[in-house]
Length: 115
Length: 114
Image 1 (tube, rainbow over the protein chains, first blue to last red):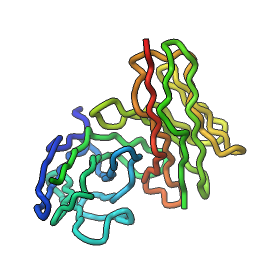
Image 2 (image 1 turned 45 degrees about the vertical axis):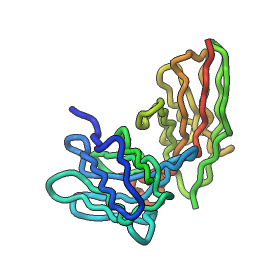
Image 3 (image 1 turned 120 degrees about the vertical axis):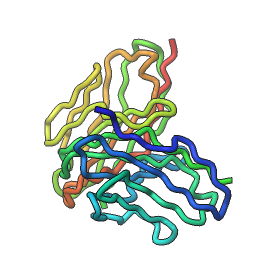
């Protein structure tokens, strides 16, 4: 059973371009979480999705950021018109169910650099 | 809102030394508590967890006890190895919303020297 797969591992974008980050959850997992890790900081929650639904997007910036988890295919975190401050590591986690006792499994992250 | 505070790093120890990384939390309700480890260039791996007061989580020689009275979940290991060098994150699962959303501390870097 493959783990959570994120791609690309590294992504370089110029200011103003779009960044698309992909996350394939573990097999059988229908709950996906996105977190952002700024340099020298802990992870900050961004969004929680189930198949075709956004459940909690309280951590998402109001502009330029969007996320989806379609019925088929990976979850996508999309950042439009990137700025230098978007440079960070973006981690995806998946779990088989919701709830505070449920373990989340993390991918290796996508490291976005905006130049 | 809920929050997690960890001791600042880096923590530098010699091999076989005793390790303590302090973690305290603020939360409504009864959160579950976790320690995650991040090796360089990698994602986070769950190290141990505890779901209720007085539970002790343990794994690979690491231990942490859920202390409700002091709202703490300190990580300990009796004898560290060079391979334990990593960043350690304390986290809680938001019990009020029950979504599984995690709130992380800022991380503590551990460096173990031979």
